[in-house]
Length: 497
Image (cartoon, rainbow, N blue to C red; front, side, top):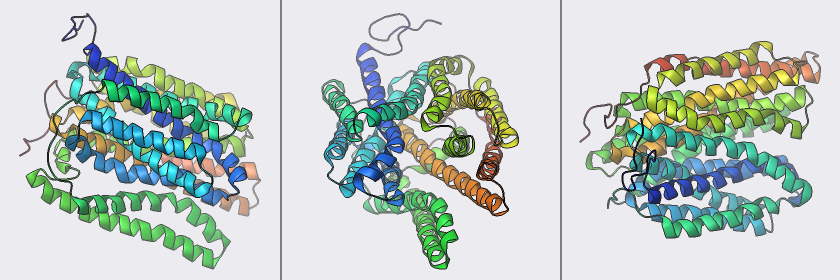
């Protein structure tokens, strides 16, 4: 069916030219933000040498970023309703550009960590802003196509980031990672400040300070505690004193996170009665939204856990170089990105089941292949093929889940839904990484203690981690069948008052 632009009359257009420019600008800004984040993992060994820091300290460059994302994203649901689209874009890109500038000229490690926190504050706003804007201005029958373009950003940036970082680190220095990103971010900021106008309505509700504090301790405590699981295990192996300290650093944040999050939820249930909630939980009255978020959380836990374990398997077990490891996962990332628009069109035409069922079957099937058949002698080409098929399964899942979840809500809840989607990904991803890394480390250590070689012990650990990921992903088969595409302008759930 041919659509017509509602202002220009151009056949096949989804949006008016002005709104199309805004969408592409938001996509470009999100691409730069994600690209920046995916370069840091490759740069950490160089930063350790240049700044004279330990590996434990260097991990704070990623931990601080992840913690900031977990704290800021839940607040964006309120902020996107309180402030205009233009204000939020300018704030996001200003924070991101400022953080990038600070990182570029950082004289030492502490300032660089501060820069990462400032960068993350901007990045945390950008993705919910993009999702909310798309849901607000894109007609329901074309949302799949637009979400497909979002998948390009989310897939290609992680594919390009490590390669770009490797080139810059080999030829220049780690500062150029930020030096390349900064001018692009400044151009996006300048263009956005000129082009972007407000899309949707704003509210005048005051921000609830206790909810902000509870959200920070709740989500921040959970993510930080989960990130300490692997470190706690290693310190525990070093001795009783280290074990006690490691247990404290793990248990205390998790307990604080659970308690704060419980109080946060109770407070939101009270505040949402008068539309003053920081994160309105009435979105969960939509059965379809709740199912889609659950499916997305399972997918994120398995996906982020596997992409953390797989490079370790390739390098420590198969003896693959860092460069070849990046090249091995590149085809899968490209498949995810390039297939996005086509998958979006299929979603618009056929709905969720056509995509989610084969996506779940492919993803779960490949994870079980990882668990059952990957050994210390598996040929690299088999790993590449399997990882590419896994990426295709993920691509078939992410776009319909993003679109169907938010499309199940009333428009006034889009910003809250976008914030919950982002938060679920952060927390589930951190949990998946923590669980799989801990399982891999524990099994590898046990195998090594029993006399196995390093490669065999590493393969046993990776095998166990992949098995856990496959088990985590199994419920996706149920979700693939029951999650549906909401009818255009139809919302799933009882009226919200």
